[in-house]
Amino acid sequence: MIKKLKPGKLILVTLIAITLVVLLIGAYVVLFSSKTIDSGIAEWSRTFTDHTAPVWAVRFSPDGKLLASGSVDSTVIIRDRESGQILQILKHPQGVTNIDFSPDVKFLVASSYNSKISLWNVEDGRLVKIFAGHTGTVWTVAFSPDGKVMASAGEDKMILIWDIASGNIIHKLKGHYRNIWAVKFSPDGNTLASGSFDANIRLWNTKNGSLVRTITGHTEAVVDLAFSHDSKRLATASDDKTIKIWNIVDGTLIKSLEVPEHAQAVAFSPDDKRLMTGGRDKTVLGELIQNFTGDSERFKGVSARLWNIETGSILQTFSRHKNDVNDVAFSNDGLWIATASADNTVQLWKLEK
Image 1 (tube, one colour):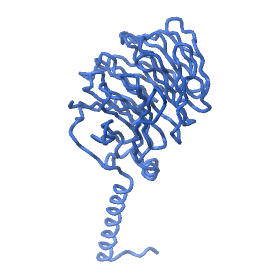
Image 2 (cartoon, one colour; image 1 turned 45 degrees about the vertical axis):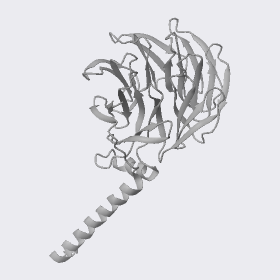
Image 3 (cartoon, helix red, strand yellow; image 1 turned 30 degrees about the horizontal axis):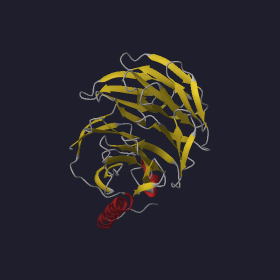
Image 4 (cartoon, helix red, strand yellow; image 1 turned 90 degrees about the vertical axis):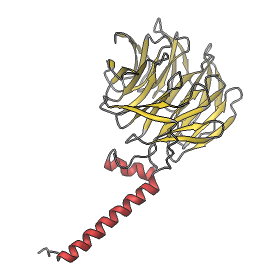
């Protein structure tokens, strides 16, 4: 037989329960959340909620007029950046892992879980060509600066360089021995950089496909990378909770930025003075709790940061997303930032120069 509590004891138990909840919330905030900085440099503009699954990638078109996002929901959404109006929804057989615009904005490429890369006409949403050559998930794809070739890589540990016009493979670059998460061309077109789960960064000669240099220094997976616009530096984001900036000429480390969580995305500002990074929004214990409780509207963590590269200081933190930030992007005019998240949304931010 269950005994009923007297009114006085019931009130006491209720107060104790409320106190414990408050203490747990306080401990959660203190232990699992990073320090926030609101400098006003970046102002939230809008949130796009059209995707129905985590968003892996976000890109501004080179002319700044369009914003594209690729998602696990098997779609790429292309929208007008200014109005937010959806212009195209590009449907894929399986989830989209990465995207890139061609320099002339005529085409968009998308990599996928289905081991293929799709080339789309941006204006009319027509599927132009499918590139098949990988086995397993293709995690990353990138156009060259002249738009004539693209690079792709993924689960098969292989980097493929493709001729866009013919669809033929020009080079097969071997060297990484685990998943390749990211490939990027330098703006001058001379170098291709790759980052892998093997914790190494490799620099390749784009003309003949030869390995120029292997850069070591991360202790866990290199998840994303970005060249500075002068092609002299490379920024890399890693699961080892660091973002490192390297000298391309000799492979030496210039600066290392530390964060409390895994770093998953990185981008240079057009003037190469700032760095935008994204990643896990909570520490390990916080992520564990979030895995059970789901995305939290109330307990949002810092999922992205804007850095001053020269000083290594954080200019502003971003904590509007309810989950991790998987990708970040600057517009070419330096006035906008976009973030793509595991909470199924894309956010747009206006920058004050």
